[in-house]
Image 1: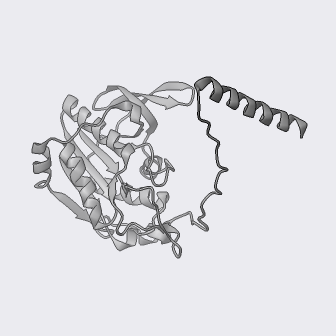
Image 2: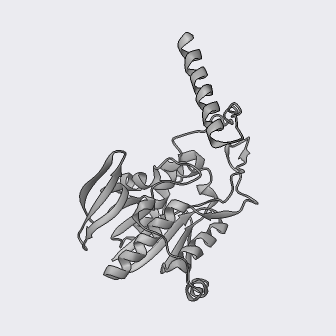
Image 3: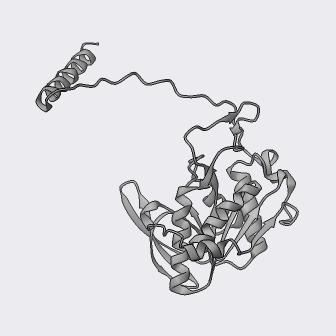
Length: 265
């Protein structure tokens, strides 16, 4: 079986800077890392390969520096990496990104299961995985917390809901997005780190994928960022010091004041 994991390299910082002209993230000079949610997708693919045999391929779209994210995944045990890198991809929204990834998947052709993290830490849209399924007309199960059963032809998975979970069955190939409750990602071993440096990373451009250039990058994106701003500062909180009973009493008095003030308005 061939398990393909679509990952993203995201900024490893809380100090996000925005280009005022393009309203997009400034990534140059910013330390990057594998999107945390994607680590669970990588781990699940590795566990499936260990249980069923086959191949794990990791794939990402981004600048050349994104190869380091693929190397990290291969240090965990992935067999090979594919980097989709082309100036034509710049400025892609989730729709254009999922289109590009789907074109790469079509070029690969032989795949059993496509895994993604539930969302990217820098965008939080949770749209790329479902977008891939839509572009490829594949079934999908999102927010997967456990794979109950899997065979070469089908899968049964538990999907997380706000008030519990549901069990869904799908044929393969299929797209899964996973949540952090599904597993605990392994740490790379020294042997795997050294081997990852020797493994092949394929570099594909838009022409390699036979893409429609009108559907790539900013041109092919269906959404536009019109304005970016910081939320207003919250009012300062209040702290108390002293004995526990005194602090509790002060807090209860403050709450009572707030309730009385709200009722009197």
